Image (cartoon, rainbow, N blue to C red; front, side, top):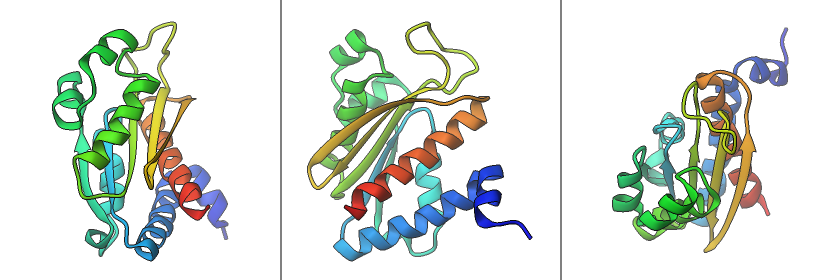
Length: 172
């Protein structure tokens, strides 16, 4: 018999599903809603949330802002910040998280912008580089991570880390 930890290490789907259940409980306790702002994951986080039956009680909306124009038009990200820092940057991840809350009825958001590959990497931002933004109760935190693997592995690791960190923030 395989343990849960072994299963989730081989298949992040089980861990993502378990995290989503925990996230739902934490948001429901506070009567808060979640909005997501996704670039490199293309809606995978919103998909993971809405895979859970009853998610309309805590998941408000998801923004898939793959293009720079979408980030600006839908989330209010400054085009100047994108030009200066690039779409995969701390200021853009922060603005995406802030914009998701400002342009929804949610109190909590998470945002991801990154280079999933296999193309698009640069020496400063190699494939696997992802910036995260989380807004909880008006406080925004950001983080940069680099994940190994192919496109699917980078995207799965991004979803997992985004949800893990949000659950941890809501537990404190």
